[in-house]
Image 1 (cartoon, rainbow, N blue to C red):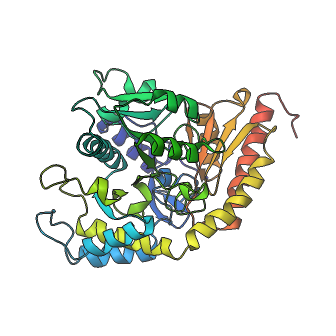
Image 2: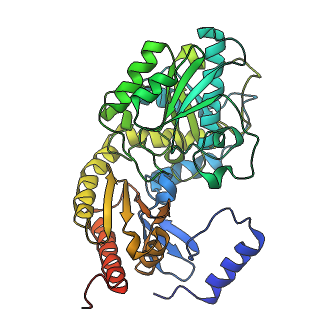
Image 3: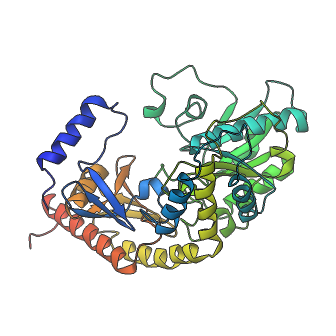
Length: 415
């Protein structure tokens, strides 16, 4: 396939000239998408194994979600929260019930949900737990990724995210992910919450050690602090259940949701929890002009309805087992480790073959879009609507790329 047409090059040059260089995209210009496929401006098709970092769990141009969005656009798309809207109530009721919680605070992006939860945790600490004003602290995990606002990068472990952005927001204590003893030791009388990704996505799809999340829940209960689960990437079907926390029998105090909650159509995020926390907010204390807008609420409700059937979770669970069985055969053949669950995997590339970026570029040449993280890891997260045959096609491409790279590195015989 040829991907260096004048149209592609012109589009890339335009973006590189006028756009801030805060991303390093693969050299392809996408024009349309359907299901698990993306099509570039020259008509070349690619299997999408990134899903916009899990924002497109239900496939590109999902007909149910597009129909809802078009219908709502013809009515009203934004009113602000200055008035009630007809789609808002059904959305937040359905989402609260999906989560088994009382209340929903809708926002737009995932990091807004994270920031909102930090404010809520502090407010709860001061007004309910009785922590002295301005003394609250929140325990976070090393290797975390919760977004890139100033407060959130204040507890990032990523030098790229933090360099030249200080001074940072105080009030956060970092401990190693998976280390219950470190969490226990870090808690004091001023601790109001523990913030954790059930699976660390940006870090390379790092799954927790057995007993970790139940242990976090037990520590939070014992010390009367909130457990906040950032399921923005791991939630909404990605791991084979609605939330990964379900698989280990844990119910957090607050769920943080985003990405797939907007169905790949509009940005939608939410903090979902019980009345004893979310009920503390009063008019004027927190808000968002676009948060919970009629269009977002309509699409969000349609997403919840898709999840209520359980079909997407089942697909992720069953197809994920097949994906991981295929990926396991690549260990020792250019791959050093595979992690993950459901339709989500972190594949560590042997450094002798090159970087994860180099492998992702090779995959692009074979019609598969995937992205690297932390140097050597490929993240694989196809839409949940992908078929078994499409999964095999993508893994076959990865297998071929690895074989070629092994030959190029002199680690396998030619032919």
